[in-house]
Every structure is written in structure tokens, then in C-alpha cells.
View 1: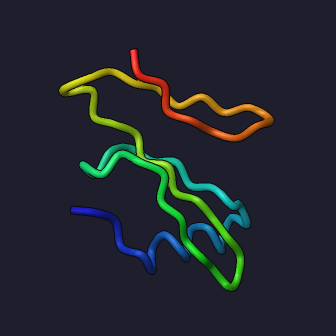
View 2: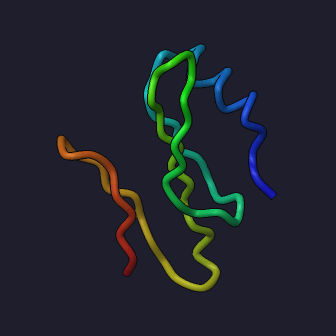
Length: 67
């Protein structure tokens, strides 16, 4: 199961941010979305059931780090 694309677009549009980070939907990854012609990203965190990871964000962007 995953989130609704229209709901994702509405949140990105409402808060004027190019990035949405949320808890797991069993699809941990970086997902690209085009909203009103703008490239946006949705970062889904893992569930920690099989492995542990965290999201690190800095000036170069965000990335998942497993440990």
C-alpha cells in the first residue's frame, strides 16, 4: 500500500516545499513527483523491522543510511 498521489501533491503545493518526508508505507525509497511543473521528492523511511536506517540531510541532499 502507498500514499495517494493527489494527497502528496496537495501537501507539497500547500507548504511550498520540494520535499516530503514520511514514515514507512512498505515502499522505503526516494520517489519523484512533478507538481505544477516542479520536480519534487518524497522520501519514505523504512520500518526498522528487518534493518535499521535513518535519513541524513545536508547541503548535498538527503540519503538513507543503514546501520
